[in-house]
Image 1: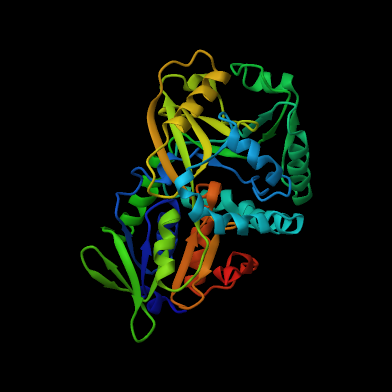
Image 2: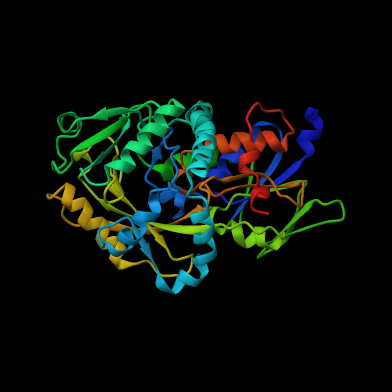
Length: 418
């Protein structure tokens, strides 16, 4: 595609989270005219603001492991456990769960791990490219991430470790003594752990997102704070996005609005089984000195990241859709879990609920719509939306520009659900 054609090509991107912002920034660098549309200001209270802040290039082992199904009932019944259901949402979840169960085979798990690894391996270099143009001093730390566990459920740990080893992921097993040396303030409840030394963490994800967004605006990007309500196509099969205020015509469009993407993909006759994992966070302000790096306590399925706002305690997976109110029980669960590791913690603040867009095979959807060649998707990154923002932006902008790639992108296509 020649430069002058590209300059005139217009792209509408729906969703100003980390996916949409990285896509928009990559597109504008390639000479496209880009309009980013979101009902909220970028970096307000979306998942890109409230996540754990991990850059996790190692996290290729999916949730759909064959051994997970045996654990689900006990996780649901355990009040300190990582999983919860809003019972009024169960009927809506059943089709998703059935597809999820079908994906919990060794073959499917290894397929997901392989294709997550392909993009995770490129995730940090893609951010490095974007970070050349903004100042992230003090906002990104390269101290790795520690996982730790007790002697319970060791089979799952061994399986995860083996798969990561086979994929060539850098990981180091830790003894309790080594964990204590690295993070001396954690109560010694653990029997073993692992250090992922090439992982990084954000000291404030919302601030990083805003810096990337401001760069997009500086380079000539347009932002419309409007609610994208529907998408249709003109006689040339070019997308028209109708917001609460007006209709916009574009040469191409991208749906990248996370858990809210399904509302739009349903309209273009795609049956993509996207659902929502609800995640929570709280902050303990003034205690960030207790940790040097993020830690994850696997038995209880929660993590703590030292941030500018204090210790951010994140976790729990709750299936309850987009409309249920936050669950006080899940907040309390996080608070109690944090105090279990750090008994000195006092009052918590900033109770937050966000939505992780998740597909039953735990792979994102990246690529063109099956019915419309000028419509592209980038959503469904479940727990890894923050990690995969920059590489998704690179992949989608390359597709829109018609560039060749040596990546095998077929595994991320929405056609896998039809």
